[in-house]
Structures are given as C-alpha cells and as structure tokens.
Length: 368
Image (tube, helix red, strand yellow):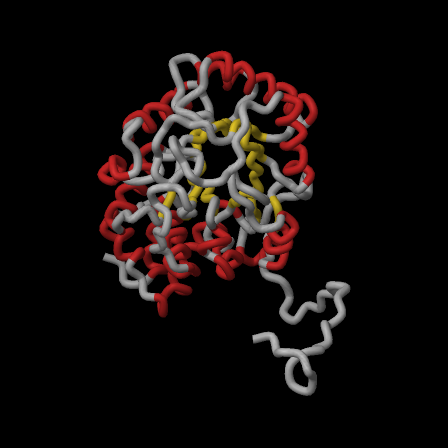
C-alpha cells in the first residue's frame, strides 16, 4: 500500500508496477488532491519523454459507409449523425491531406478507413499511398488503422513501409458486448497480435466515458499493458446525435485528467496520447494534461473538428514543451535540471495589451 503519490512514482521508477487495486485508488483521488496526482505522474512522463510532445495527424481515407454497429461511432451502421460520407481517397489525395499535418509539425501520419476490415485490394491502395508519402517525406512515421486484419495483410503493410498499426480495445472485455455486437473483443486483440507479429508497432487504446465503471476502466488498462501496446491513445466519448450513446455525459475535466494520470502510472514508459474529445472534455485543463501525456492529434479528427492547429501548437509552446522532431539534431532534455528556466525570465511575445472598451464606464455590456 502506498501512502503518497510520490511513493508510488518512486516504486514505479524502480521497476515495481502498480497493481489494479492501486490504479483504482488513484482513479478515486479527490479533486482536492488531483494536482498532487498529476505532479507524480508528470515525474514518470519526464523520465521517459522529457519535455517533448509527439504530434500526430489523422487522414480519414474513407468516411462513413460502415457495416459495424459500434455504439460510440458516428460512422456506424444506420448512424443518424450528419457526417461526411465518401469512399476511398486516391493515393494522391491522401498524400495531399497528409502534407498539411506534416507542415504543421506532425512526425506521424495516421491513415484511417472505416469498415470491418480491408480487402486485399484496399490494402494495396493503402500501400500505394504509403509508398508515395514516404517518397516525399522519408522521415515521417505512418500508422495504419483499417479495422480487423486478415492473415498476411499486416505483413503487406509492413513491407510497404507502414511503421505502426492502430486498433483500439476501446473498453474492457466485460463491457464490450454493451457497445458492439458485430465483432468481439477477442477479434480486436487478435488484430493487435497480427500487427505485432508482422513487426508493426502496436497502437491500441481506449474510449472513456461509455458508461463503463472505474473497475472496467482499470480492467481495460491492464489488458493494454498485457498487450504491450507501444502507443496508448485515450479518446473521450463524443456523444454524437444519431448514435446509441448520444446524450451520454459522465466525464468532468477533473475526471479526464485523473484518467490520464492513471494511464501514465499503469503504462509509464509508453506513448500516451490525448485524442478525440479532449477539447470537449478536458477543456481548459488540456495544457495541464500535457504534463502527463506526451502525444496528441493535431487539428481535426475523423468526423469532427478539433481545436485549431495553431492553438494546439501555441498550447504546446506556452506550456513549456517542444514538438518532437521540430529541431532536428537537438537532444530532448534528460533531467529535471535541464528543463528548469531561470525565474522571472523576460519573454517578449511581441503583443500589446488589449485595452478594455466594454463594461464599467462604457455603454457596452461587460465580458461576463
């Protein structure tokens, strides 16, 4: 039993992982003690990732038109969400979209397509896209997210230069039947294992806020640890109108931050990404979350708009972080001493104070 969050961080750094019981205790942290939890989780983040943030960029290769019935998804079978629907982008179109993210600082491009899983012909379309993208941007990482994989497809993707494969577990096995009936939890695990077997880096994470219990959230986290997922995206449910989970709001900004801190404790040395729904649920706590996570998606998501890309990059810089790969050849800080600036350092932002022209003394309503 740990007495303080820092005691648990010390243990974790010494190679003694947290237990499910301890993770559940962390999730139950009071709002009053939340910052202490974040500070302890931040120690783990800095140990493995310094003060860098990995920027990822999504390209939705095919939107909607999905025969699966995942209850959280705006692209699901019979979805009433008014999303864009289109079939496969051509390789040239996909590369053009990806370049916007790369210019914005993304070091990984995530190529995503809706559907149960790709045909071999569709896999070949993706490989053409990857080859064209890598020819123009040889240093960029590519993660594919195409659904359930058949035998041999992961190897084809790997041979074409795909670096990683994303397939989220989404929720605990004990909760899976409540969100999907057209495929199983084990189908998802099998696809992650296929990707690993082909040498692709496994990317698998969660959607939180789908009426799961804290116990089920911990169950899912330890399943991801068992899978040894290199990258753990944490999505926060966006309850689209026209889906079965419409109107589901069970997350506060504080709860989201605690969840991210617990993910860091359970998977201390893994890339943890605050993903879809962060703007909606973390809201003004997003910069604080950067002290726990080390990765985010830049700009928009698959079917919804995200925070403006410039706002994301400004947030990273304002919080004292640097974009991974933004300064080629520069080493990331490796100790806390290297990360500390001189106090009261003058920073000229080139901005003038905005003079008040509303409220008291004017005929204009105040900003309230």
